Length: 452
Ligand code: PMP
Image (cartoon, rainbow, N blue to C red):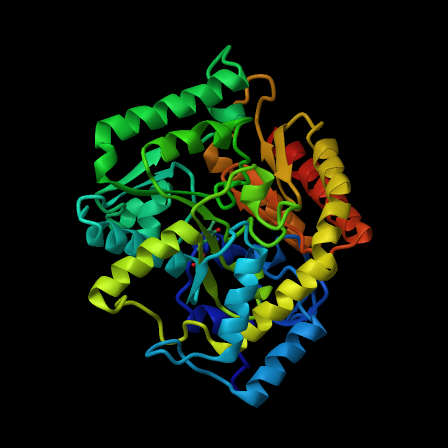
């Protein structure tokens, strides 16, 4: 008689894993999820975990939201799928576009749909290239982003991402320029004040524009708070310093709000948190509360007019995805926005002081160098020496050990570099936050006692 294989063995036999540390899953095994309940996931072994990362920042309304499920079911029953080509599209796509423009910081605008955040950034770069070429500036192709930024994994969006791991693909492509990461605590020089640091970031941008030539630059993309870089809010005054420089040189500003957008920072948009109005907003993740793959490009009035003129000239913008504006995704997104506007955003604001207080409390530990955060996104950075900010030796895999210890105790949180990242769902309660911080504190104490 053959023994039935475990879910773990079957997952490993059948899956080519992405963004997964193979030695770690070989040692510890996979987690195969069968159910969700509020902010908890339940696996094939019946283990229950509080997911303090909302999946990948996206499952903001919990894993069993009835209203979202009903919105999907009702749309499946009416009309289960369509594209947005040839002037045909679902009514839901029209309703969602109107809604997204209404809740955006723009007076007017237009929306284009994709299936993911990566595709939205990729599409936006193509839109810029298309627009500049139609305006007689085909040389305006360079894209400016920042080191440590995350904008996705397609060839263009991975080139925008400022992470060294993309070198295994021979990326970035030419013409993608990365500024310094505006992380004062880590990148500030000895004796440099935060204001001096921010001024240096501005001066660097001016130098890069002068070096590359303003007439070769297509656009600037930034996350208001870097997410997958380890939750890095910009230094004080950063956007106030760089946006006028970009404006002076006529460089379009794109706010990648895939994580920050729709409430995560405590405002509807991360750009509102930092007081700037971009030309374009990129949205995904919370857009469908993780119930459907979807991205949206929200074009502000100026860029949408310029793109319209460029398209009128050749009669067609030759780009789109089969599932762009999928009616089920749009119906879910309409509901997700209703739920966010109808209470979840207020809950993010209500929970923020307790969330920050928890991060601050744990940052008192000898091996936590810094806490960072805004709204319901936060991080704690582990250090070997607090005074000198010396990181732990990479071979100790400290943040992975902390996250693994948390997993063993029913808490999912994410190691990113030497940081532990927390992004609880917008439906979280005070009790969920307490459970999260208690379990994390126990894991931090255990791992630091082993490595310090
Ligand atoms: N931009 C940002 C800021 C992101 O955080 C992500 C995903 N984490 C992306 C783009 C890419 O989105 P996706 O994974 O849906 O392609």
